[in-house]
Length: 257
Image 1: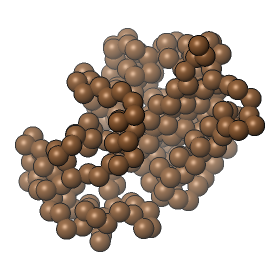
Image 2: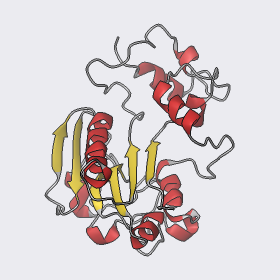
Image 3: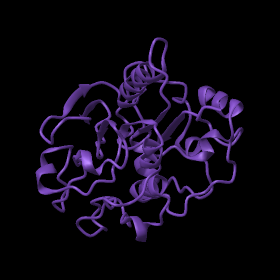
Image 4: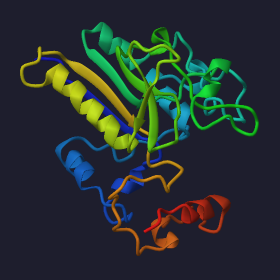
């Protein structure tokens, strides 16, 4: 039998509760259809559900103390230089060596920034750190096609580095990041396995940044069906305090309807 193709999709703050029937106000008909036609892991859990550490574990199959990502990359709580070790294993490298055409489109957030990265993203922060980072070709852990940024939270003013681009050759794009990255992914699939293309087995990762702060950066014509819901109805889990700092931030930054 031919080897199966792999399409890996992950969103930054999209939790399992968003797919639980009756447990959340979020409507996800397309994802529901994917679940119905595939396999749903109802009891899967992360032992470090924070952006960079979780991504590093998914990529390497190693715990943070082994892969080097013990904190969010370049967070004020992390030592300088925290990032995915260059020699860390990855499923992408394994599949590439097995003949797969590998691609990565979207948020990476596993490269430790260096001073030359200070010009990228909306940072530096008050503590002098900055989030976004360029990943050299030899630090992409098995992905041949590359269309990625480190961590760019400007959802409507995007930038990426492509496979052959140097540090100062980023692509700047105006638009909704999730939509743009989907278009790039569809184009990758059409070239790789579409009609008229060579029969190539692919492994493609598409990690979206939204839903992620700032929550008020949404595209024109966004879904307004949640406008009548209160913060308590939207943040309806018992472990979410709508009167906490985080809860108030989520409520205060709801999109204007």
